[in-house]
Length: 450
Ligand code: LLP
Image 1 (cartoon, rainbow, N blue to C red):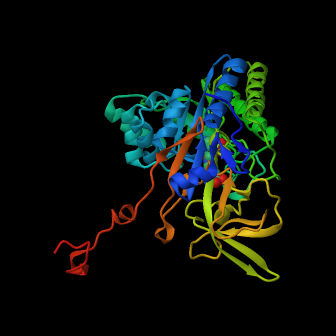
Image 2 (image 1 turned 45 degrees about the vertical axis):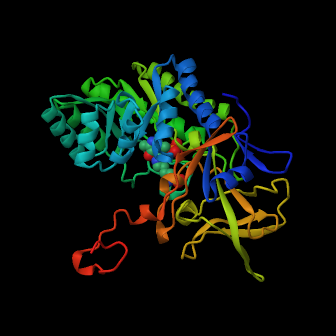
Image 3 (image 1 turned 60 degrees about the vertical axis):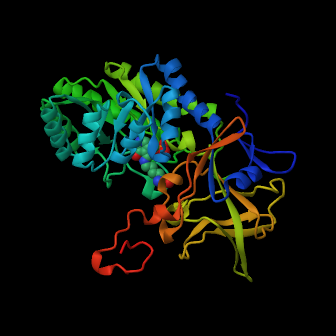
């Protein structure tokens, strides 16, 4: 595929994504609309895949962390690029399998996988389950023995590495619902427990230190601690760590406060990790483990934008100017959850400098429903097309129907042409699962059959 810049401003002063003019996209598909550049997604997948190939002799696999953005087309792209996927629920597993994604390249995560999710994963023959509780090891043992199979697992460990990011997204502190702590010995006990089971085969360990992290050193430190733990386990029990899964978490550009890393630049992060693992293996006399990494945000985040239409513009003199759009926290809850920052652009006047500071508000009945706060924009008026950048990850996947707003559709742009990968919701979708008990039914109501 042609590798062009994901975003550019064309001769008409319009924002383009993957060669498609945003003004045309809005005309064709309406707003709000999520738009993804296929070339960027593929390029990112290849950067990670090729780095493992070149720097580590291909002894590993990239798993797309599909929680960042899951739909059938995304699993198709990952499959075509020859990478694996991590899933964290029965729903993600179902979507992947429906898209024809090979179970042999699926890893299943989750701090509280439900019985039926484990059943589904084991029946499907997923490559590996990442166990996150002793009771879960028991459940896997039971289900696998009932099915007469042996299930490969990794153990999620918490190496206790602090990474600089928003507290809610941080997952390897001592106080975490994820993993078994290395420091207090529970990781060691859990590993010994897993080793005692007949239908569970412990392959190694997994850690994920958090998300939207730029410090290479945090990743390296976590990798080293995992290898130290592997050495300790080998010394104590003779267990050989065959696989090490180092999670995801590489940061992306949202605003100019973030580093802007070109796709190929992410190779450095992976190289640093692979190098740290290889060195530790040498130092401790360990076999070099098969390496897995699980990037999500960095694969799809900068590939996506959201297009909105400006509606009400309200100025509160001396306080703030609100530019309200036809979306909001129902398509992007990240400001409401994490005070996340974004860069908005008036897509039909993309060359114009920002002349005022405004807050982009959503249309939900909620004061905290902002898409971005205190951003610079040219004077926006009703009808203007507003693009918010870097919304490819954790936007659609976290969208909801609050206020019974419709979750926007997603289109994928390839060579300048867009096609739906998630079709628009309809009002009928909103009431599809509603049920009205007999005694509440209105005789002449449209929905009632009487
Ligand atoms: N592997 C595991 C086990 C994870 O928990 C995660 C993300 C990833 C991989 C992928 O991390 P990434 O490369 O995307 O940073 N909703 C939050 C992000 C939550 C991330 C959860 N785990 C947000 O909107 O920022």
